[in-house]
Length: 304
Image 1: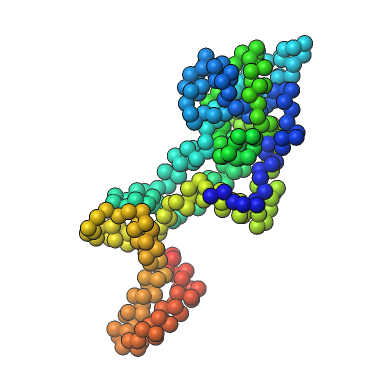
Image 2: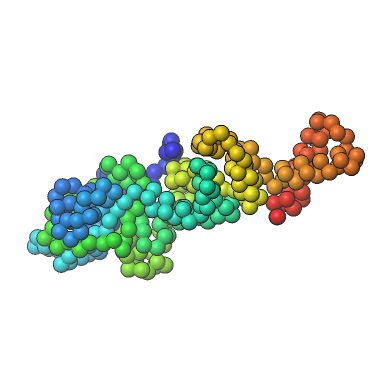
């Protein structure tokens, strides 16, 4: 779900009023229009026809694209394929998911949720090797997050300059154009670019990041501790009249106790059985809440 009222990633791509439509530059975003698709098909038909490849990103350095006497210095214009970011992220998040037979919701290890979030933050800040993040809204018609795969490059003849220029819909800022060149060259530490927190710090950055995580599916995975995974396996193994539907699975997940809840309940049960605590619902509830709200008890419960 897109966040409302949050700052755009306007520091990665130039706003419409600053785009130079008279020149082709490194970091330009090209829409796969009919003319460009026909040219791309000469080198790689799949990129020209597959629905997922809607755009391309220019990799050739801007200095080599300057036209003098009608021609640019570069003999070839190198562009790379651009696809929806969700497809790339889906494959990465699958590494952290351990499917449970008979359970329709993806399940992952709670500790791996940190790695998944760190990965998405690296995507947002363009520090993932070989890819370049293109936020939705970066150019006209870009209504979903995209991702340029720098190794998936195509060399077009320089005489296709005008065709590429006619397809231009976006332009990376100067520092991010340099970053694209650095990534394409494999020199990952040479160009330092600002990240989301630097440009949009505080609550706005945190809200955008959370919405970004939601949109790309981090919270669609049930991140469970080992204890909760075991409890879920028991629940799924319980005979049912029909297979679990998604809404039933979500109810099961909500009912799973945490380690702290389970240990507090067990401690109260032992004390009641030993006649050290009154067997009264209100008393047992207060005792369990006392334990769950005790910092050292929570830390001990979660350390297991």
